[in-house]
Length: 47
Image: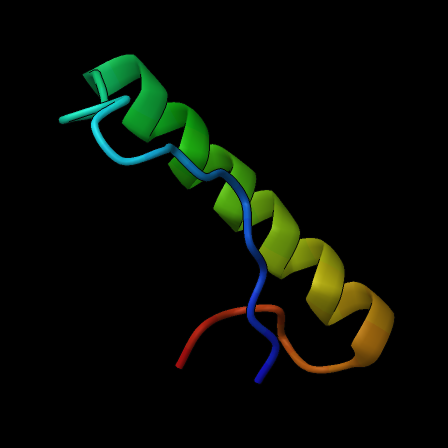
C-alpha cells in the first residue's frame, strides 16, 4: 500500500485546517487514489 505525503505544516504553524482546506485535501486525495488505481490496477478505491 503506497503512502503519499501531500502537505506538511511546521510545529505551531497551523492548529486547524479551514473547511475549505479540508475539502480541497479530500478532493486531492480522491483524485490521487483514482489516478493510482488507473495506472497500477485495481479499482482505485480504498477498501
